[in-house]
Image (tube, rainbow, N blue to C red):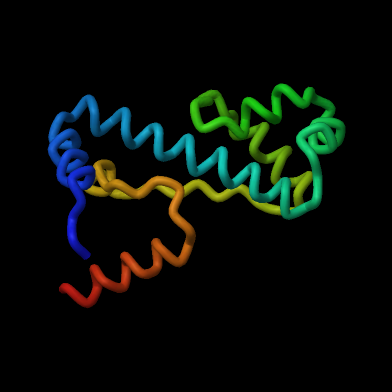
Length: 121
């Protein structure tokens, strides 16, 4: 796949360790926010409905689903998972993955990238 100007720009920016760390944290926050929202929507619940189940406010659910929010606690994520018939799974990856540019990709994208990487070996 041909690299875009943005891809080249991002590669250059990721050479800066501070930028790479901020970029990684942003990707993690996006992943969590999108997963919470997707699970809630799949369950057919509004933010207000989920808030009632968790005995919290709609504003708190909105905050948890915001990609800019970084205050997710494991205990709250467990409460959400329980309310939505899901489970929390935390995965630690080797440090070399910290600068990869995958933000909120669909599972198929992860799978395709892994298969390409394996074929290249």
